Structure formats: C-alpha cells, structure tokens
Length: 105
Image (cartoon, rainbow, N blue to C red; front, side):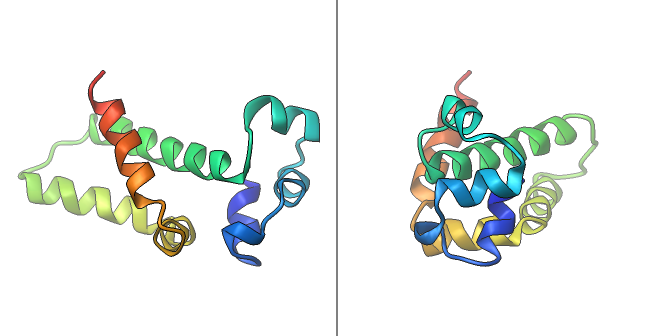
C-alpha cells in the first residue's frame, strides 16, 4: 500500500496524509472515511499482516511452538520497513496492546 512506499522516502512523522493517498491511488475523501491520521493507516497495515499471518498459521502444521514462533518472526521480517518504523517511533506498545485485544475474541 502507499504507506510502505512513503516510508522508504520519509520517516512516519514527516509523512502527510496526502503522501499516502497519492501513492495509494485513493481519494482524499475515501482516505478520511477510513482513517483519521497516518498512525491509523500504519496500525491498519500491521493489523492486516497479523491477521494474514494468523490465517496462514491456522492451516500449517508446526512441530513445536519454536517453529511457530520462527514462522511468525519470518513473516514480520518480510515487512522490514514497517518493523523499523514501529521501533523508531515507539509504536510497539500500541501494536502489542491491539494484538492482545484481538486474541481475547
């Protein structure tokens, strides 16, 4: 999506909403109907990766919890730009709390 492209050029705090929707080929109105700010789109993308990983993991057979953890880490490392942004902008706590909320349901 547009955010990852923008993150290759700028840090998250310097990215404007217009940067994202221009690279995403989404109108401004559509963007604001779905998201309030750049951090929202960041969290949305992380949520999508997490949901996809969980979906895939449910179809796989793992020999141990270590293999399951390694698979999960490898999936996240495919999105190095988002991971770096999460760490650089101290967003891991927000992401983790959203992950914990998702697991409760």
